[in-house]
Image (tube, rainbow, N blue to C red; front, side, top):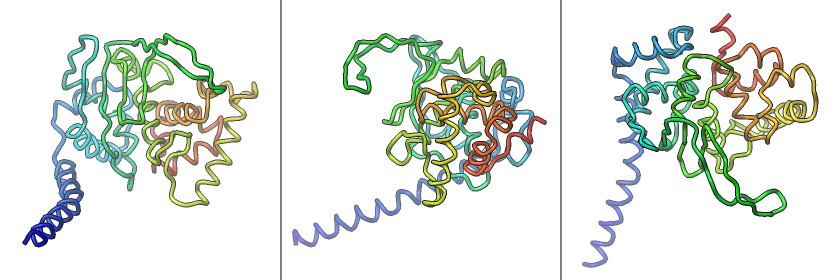
Length: 272
């Protein structure tokens, strides 16, 4: 009898594990099919400089992604910040744009968002490449953690929404999350096949070396923070791809082509 109940319990657990992803998929699909609330669309139209430029198919896909992300993403206000619905919508809309291309996968795991009112301070011990440990106090605009957390400054998000420079903090930090889907943040997101991985490595390594080691005209067009390491290079070029696509298109056309294939989007056509 005990063996019977053991088998029964095992069967129930297996069925639950098999059905859970199906249930999540159906729930997400139902959310994506709902029309975006008019107030959300108005916030995007009025407060995000890039939104009016988006082609209708991209905008509709963004709406679908946004519905799902908002339903599954937990926000926490830090340093006394109260997170409002417009803050949630405007923050996640920028991340949703990265998956607004036809055939793009949904975000996996939906990182928790810690939202600070402005730049925040991180203190602690940091080890350098030689293993030497030093105590550092850094003022940061954002961070992306492998444990599925994104830390952002709302003041800088607001600045990015106005399109005042070539930065997008949300895309930068979510690019790190995308980079880490394969278990390591190394500047290479999950790609389809070994040939794609090798082509990506060749093109990105050449561009990273140029940005970090030369003073070429192309290198000067890209934010110098890209020279920090391959991980930051990837996040910076993702920012540039979406908010200043013409810069990346002319500076490093092969890099632009790789991101165009990765995201299934061509932002260069949006703003011409």
